Image (cartoon, rainbow, N blue to C red; front, side, top):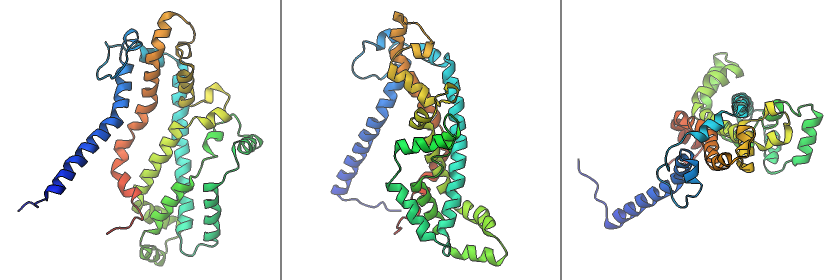
Amino acid sequence: MSRIRRSRGEQIFNVFNIAFMILLMLACLYPFWYVIMASFSRPTLILGHRGGLLFPLGFSLQAYEAVFANRSIWIGYYNTIIYVVGGTCINIVMTIMGAYYLSRRFAPCKKFVMLLILFTMYFSGGMIPTFLNIRNLGLLDTRWAILLPGAISTFNLIIMRTAFASIDASMEESAMLDGAGHWTIMFRIMLPLAKATVAVLVLYYGVGHWNSWFSAMLYLSDEALKPLQLVLREILIVNSANATQGGGGDADSELLSETIQYATILVATVPILCLYPFLQKYFVKGMMVGALKG
């Protein structure tokens, strides 16, 4: 089998394109690598270090021991898992039901409902009215204040609706002729065919809940309900080992505070990164739904 001969211009372009992508990849990965190496470095060495970092300066687990010794970290993990799992389930169920209705060809008032949904994509009531609404509904300082207000993302709803609308209508018609109702069509025909898009939305919603802290800061005052990101925010902003060790202000704590910052970043980032490898095979397929294909 003969190889395709490429012109000199194409070869030069490929070389520069590959080199550029490698440099871009390194530029994106190096900050994360720096944080990993700094978190395992000795506090006394990293405090005065300037410049790049390819390997740990010494090796120490003091920062991680200090982070995980704090009970509030584990409470934050527990709360975050509840918010991620519970919130994502609510998001997916509500998004699928809304998208199924909006994708039906003869659904009543479909265009009007879609217009109202799109309106919320560009305009919102604002932070203060939303806070007053949450308070008047009795959701303040409860888990529902985190789970319910963002039950549906307009952008994700449009993606899911496009995925359902791209499924051949003849399959739905055949199912109806066989006596299938809307619930059967949605769960046994639509969802299996749109599982790639569902996987992408699970990733979107899950990452959103994992990284969310502002809503918790507004609506939660009970320490037992605060998510991990809010706990770590206190550690990073205060820049003090006291937030992790529960007291003290000695020299060792001051030295340890620098590496604790890097350790908390990894504690907050690594778990959600582990989710991506399981969903990445669906990612491109799910995001390209509705795209023009040549």
